[in-house]
Length: 226
Image (cartoon, rainbow, N blue to C red; front, side, top):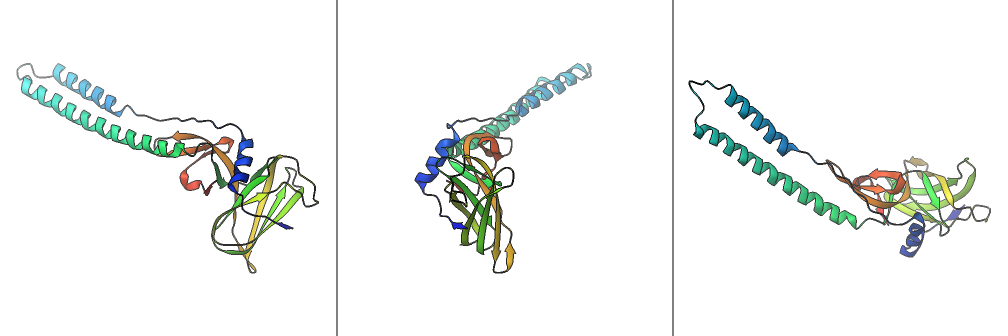
């Protein structure tokens, strides 16, 4: 069993550089609520005019009043939509700085590059002993890492690519399992895997991160930014 240390900025950058080029992508969901409201109003007004009592037709003042109401509501809706779009744009601008950065999210895989591999662990409580078991895709043990005692929270570690027998493992994707305990009591631990942010995705309710082929994650699901 061997020990490991947290990655330096240089190490993290070297590993991320082998994840591929930085790309950006975004998608948005927009609604035609204002246009729909306007169409419904005009349809209702037209129907009302067609079916009015010819002996008691609507006067010009009433028609003008209804059109003015529509214009006012439409203006408010457009203002609300503009404010919402501006807020979303500002958030996307802030999050755009994360494109190309590495993040740790929940997952049980660790990618070994020529510069090593980075993984992580999230602990709900302090643990006196934390161990990482790394296996190949067939389940064969490759490396065991002893992270020692860790406080509650998210932590990262570097695998130098060496196997337990001292040989250098082949670059690729490996599986990892985290075991943690505080004294004799087990501590629930969540394995974290490294991914590279490749784009910002704007949905109807939030702006999220596209983390390579790992999928889309909210900011709350990101445990660390490298």
